[in-house]
Amino acid sequence: MSTPVEPLRLLLLADESEWAVHLRECLQPMGGSVVLLTAPNWAAVDSLFANDRQAVVLATPELQPAPGRCELPTILLLEQEPLTAPLGASDWLVLAQLTTDTLRRSLRHVRERGVLVATLQRLAEQDPLTGIANRQGFQALLTARLAENDGRGLALGHLDLDNFRHVNDALGHQGGDRLILQVVARLKHQLEASDQLARLGSDEFALLIDTRRDPNRAEWMAERITEALTEPYWIDGESLLLGCSLGIAHARAQAGADPLMWHAHIAMRQAKSSQGCTFHVFNERINRNARSLADLESELRRALRRDELELHYQPRLNLADGRIVGLEALVRWNHPERGLLAPSEFVPLAEQSGLIVPLGYWVISRALSDMQALRERGLAPLHMAVNLSFRQFQDSQLLATLSRLIVEHGVDARWLEFELTETAVMRRNELVRQTMDALGRLGVRFSLDDFGTGFSSFVHLNSLPITLLKVDRSFVGGMEQREENAKLVHAMINLAHNLNLEVVAEGVESEEQLALLRAFGCDQVQGFLVSRPLPVEALIEYLLQVPAPGLVQTL
Ligand code: C2E
Ligand code: MG
Ligand code: MG
Image 1 (tube, rainbow, N blue to C red):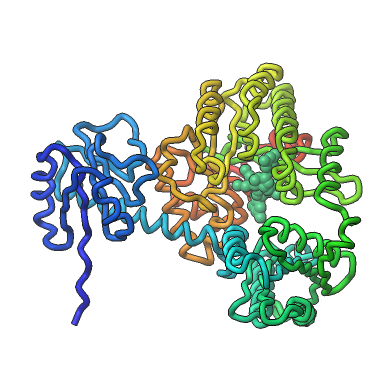
Image 2 (image 1 turned 90 degrees about the vertical axis):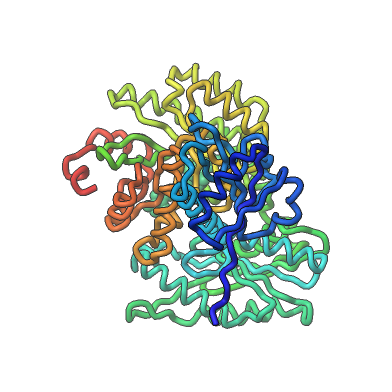
């Protein structure tokens, strides 16, 4: 006996009966697979259908559910072809063109889109290589677990592999991936069902340890884990030893996730000072003297004053003509003792402390003056993309300061572009919107960075003044090995094109990835294959050489 397939429910919200009549006619050939239900408005049926996975709303513009009120895909019913894509709808149908075929196509489109959204949502919280939670997923998980027991009976481990970068250099990324998989397997072996494991970064992991039954469990687990990781690894027939540093912090009642993460991080840094696989348990008393958040903050403040920051630029290549069309400015901190630090080591701190505001202005003004420098060297103008944190929008002076900086540097604002992450723009904050609109009027463009990671809903995408979408490198990497990734990237590119956005693929490292992206119709690529981020002098050298004939042909 076959299980009956549930019919697709179409909820019609329309005043004129004309739509209902027309739709019924179109639905006839589809038989019982689709049913049409009518309702006076969304509010009337909200509670009945809000969680119905098999429902699609069809609404005329007057009755379209308010933004954020309806999770179901919505198809807008229009009298005439719209000039631009309507806001808040997954698709639209025009009365005069309504046929069984157009309806069928539209329904397929919104459902495929729904599957993409669901997959992206799942992937946004999961590390693609290992399948365990990523930083984002872990944060949600940690907050939930802390709330469950009022913060008691939990310990957090922060594990960092030593010199993983060298392993990657020596064995290649695939070898590095295999090593990570072995590390995860060893960690999983030590954990019980009520513990949890997550991958926070390329070589960083979080372990949530249940200590309800045994308050000392975290300590003896740390001992066993460091022991297990000390054993040699076998990669491609070679044995390899790896050092690691594990920091442990015990949760305190009502202290929240952030201090716990920070304490485990400090303990991990302390473990780093000894060789091999070691662990360190955070101790409140001792750590009064340790380098605190406040110390780091004042160091960063000093760095800004002493000009210890640098900008590197990564070129963006246009696939249609093989030319470099843009640059992304990426900040680095040339720390007097610790060397060149990546943004991941200080941008989060700068965001938390508010220092991102002055730091951000430093970045923008340096990028603008380097744009001038490129022009003076006789180079054709390029789009300059600068990363902007959500926090920078909360600065009431943003618009005024930016306008002033643009004028001061005598740069045409149309060449300036800001990269925003989904988490920033999807907060749907009115202030963000207004500032974006005002900057847009100056000619500045916006792109959506790290697309595919951590968004809530991208129905709002087409309501924002964005011209470009950057597919996150976690999807681009692994496209050759994992078909799912390739499919997703393809779907994201199509989605962007449907919304009239250009697409940049980030983190392109191999010719294979490039060939796939080309086949998918991607517009631009950025990544080590084209060039690593370069200091301005090296960038000028690079730009004076390209488009070298060889490069254009191979790319
Ligand atoms: P993002 O905006 O997604 O920048 C791209 C990152 O990918 C850069 O890392 C770049 O070096 C790296 N990358 C580029 N191509 C490849 C590749 O082929 N393979 C691999 N594995 N990586 C590649 P970076 O410089 O460490 O920057 C990390 C993040 O820090 C940036 O991610 C951005 O979100 C943030 N950031 C950088 N500069 C600033 C800034 O001035 N302000 C703010 N608010 N954030 C910044
Ligand atoms: Mg970026
Ligand atoms: Mg990015």
